[in-house]
Image 1 (tube, helix red, strand yellow):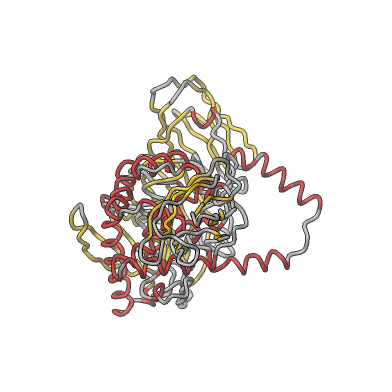
Image 2: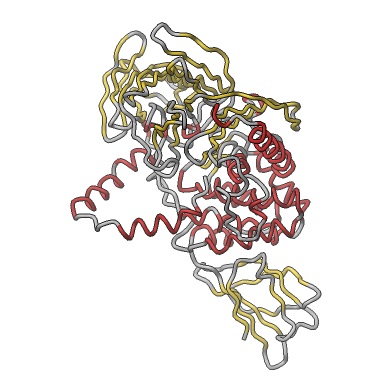
Length: 555
């Protein structure tokens, strides 16, 4: 989800907030050390099992903002264990944990639940247990930025409810192993809602049950691996319409669930056009749509949007741009619906390729921000796509690194969006071969399909397939917030010397420079070396600062 346009608002709000008390600061520190590490750390109580399948089965009492039900865990033992950890926010009650007909003992610490089994679960065995729970989940006040349940009503006064928990965590509303490194291979999502409403979740609708208490239960089957924060429910007075879209794997269902009040031919046409164009462009760049078996859906929400796998949350008011705006100020961002394009881009980066630790959320957002440029390029040309990237530079803060700290469930700077897109355009320029670059993007999604990755996976993969050692480039732009300075000087003989001045030791990076007519890729280090370009002089020197995000010092 793109947060760029709200950066100034967030900073202003922070400045206007009264200073926290000493007790509040101590409490925040305590939570960071304990609650966040319990959520972010892969301890033996979490690595001892691998989730194979979930069946989430709940009832939503909208009037009381209350949920109740169960989640069945099917897990495989990675090693012998007698105790494990799952996660559920402590404002929700764990009513019981059932295993082989008996209730298991459990304890809780912050949002972690520790379950003890009556016997040792042997390595390689597959077991099931069911967690029954209930309570009032956290209510989002500004979804999707703060996360939780978004309890709203449509203009007709009917309930309009959705979940959005990226960052906050899926355990804010359902029990699971809440860590991005472990995805269930498949899932069944069953949600009971008042009979006049519909629930839309991920995957395909396989059954609808009319219950005796005035509720209707919708059963959604997901046959591909799914990350916990992508699991969603969307409740409203929906109208459904469909479209068949040609994909690399064949004709695919695209379903649209929009509020009855918004069901017009104009709005239907807007979504159909944007979705068809988006999937066409992204299959060209990234390869086959990764969740063909689960189909593709747009689901209208009161909040702006989220990349919920095979059920994209959409709240962009049926208009081009980002709520009608273009953050690049180039005009190119107003030619397409931002939420359709950006959130669909996450189907490849974020949902197909998932960061193991939220510290590497930059992988999701940098690629997906860059996908906006590639969408523009596919339909309008390379220069417009790169103009869009360059225009986005105005949103970069360089406040802290794009990568966050590991094992404490904390992401890096919001620069992971626009700076991330700028970064990938720069890497492409370094590769200097557009055919190879497209091959890298498609191969990345093929080789890591439905898998979890970390920083080193991405660095090593891009370096290997580009035949460039980019380790120091990644270190500079992802793990620091310093922009390197290219220093060029001309000695008394008229020879050009160049080096990088930065804070990364043994830094090395390509740069395109030369004369007005010819730019050549030159690899420079942090030590001055001769630039061997014939006829290069100070008065005809040209450096590609359009595609390279650098500082320049010519002496």
